[in-house]
Length: 104
Image 1 (cartoon, rainbow, N blue to C red):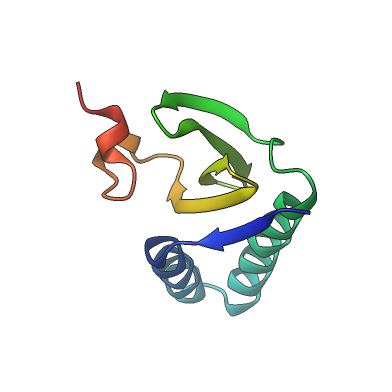
Image 2 (cartoon, one colour):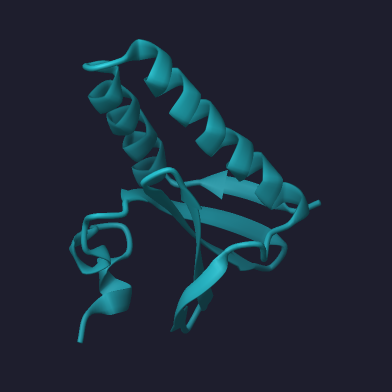
């Protein structure tokens, strides 16, 4: 098993997602957050399960889609680092946690 480290930005993303969905449905917010957390646990056993979305100097960035959200992470040195949890309709280049990887 590998270690999964969740960045502060990704933690803030989870909180924001929960608060946003909770405005309409508390039950849905719990369901979506639990599903995202289940996927994060899955990374402990299957760190390369996500699709590669970019190649960087620190290895490839990968993503897992959960509902409308993209869990963006990288795997290196037996550690998964979850960089951000990003709504699929937003541009990756505008995300402060990973925008640097998409600058041209």
